[in-house]
Length: 280
Length: 251
Image (cartoon, rainbow over all chains, first blue to last red):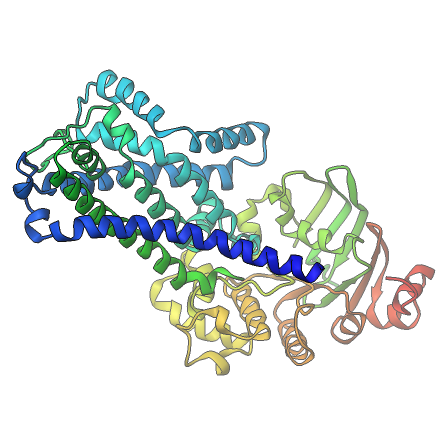
């Protein structure tokens, strides 16, 4: 009887895994089935249009790339800096504890709330308008908690023996962090940051909230230009009644998925390459 | 006769981790160019003691020490801890090479203390020779240090400590993670090194203390119980508890 229970549990777990995978496969298949025929070089290189056969995602694609790069430039130095401070300098004081708990909470705040904050703070307050910069700042806020937490974990994983070895040679704190802790934590930090950026790449809600445009027939040329992004474009197409736009949305989903998969693959490659030396 | 300043002199050294009183009134003088072994059961304060000597314990948050420690006559509290640790090197229990190349492991210390770049290759070679590791690694200096065996890693850690030209080297149970052959290599190395350096070794292994050291100190519950010539300590200990410990009645 105990034996049967064990078997049963195993198959239940297997079923759970299968169902999850099947649903994912179904979703991918649906997008592929509808969108693959619409994928073409022209699709990547055309601006949106009200005629489905002429429409493309050029502005959305470039908008997303711009947005991601700007978000990275803003959020990575801030996030990694905060993580280094919290792990290496702040110590175990109650204040540091409260800050850490709050950062964890911020990671769970819905993205639309960051959109409202971005609208009030960046679009209106700093009068950046509906620009790429306002979007990137909002996205940076959104992923900052994730970046800080994952960087902290990477830094914490560096064994103390490395810090001691460094101090025993007469290194200062700065030298220890700069030459030993950060290089050893770097693969973990990079992996976490890339995953955080891919989260930003897939978000639509905060961008809609700050009023990113949906119809743009040019590629941005500076951070102060208005922009659109892939998820917004997909959302826009999917909400139109004409059936061809549904296919365009599916094709857009495929492009977005390909980008996200590529980013995650890079993260995994980095992790595997250095994993050997992450175990002391 | 000229009065020689001893390498290390502690007076009424007390130390606490939080409320735990880890060292009690330790007054001890350690001679230059000798190997001094510190033995005692776990938790007797022997590691705490040597980690006070290079102010390594200052890095811990709830650690506190009182008393005087003189290194070659100079009060260590009056010195910059980073400069002090350059003079008083340390080798740890578990080999802890940096996850970098063998070359970088040696070169790092001299570099942060401002060595001329063109002297670096020669220094790496001479340091590895001092640690009796050169022949084994000379063709693979660019390999990652973590690819070495445990014993080689520990000798690399000793070489790394030697590279910044310390006066004193503290060994915190350097062989407890190593096999007997690697252990004997490290013991031979220590005997070679005492010509130039003052060595202090914390060890759990009494045979090791008897083999390599000139003087032995026995710690128990944070107190220095007995200190003297190694032969005398192992043959005719004065204190009952020392005898009980070295004959294996507890510990």
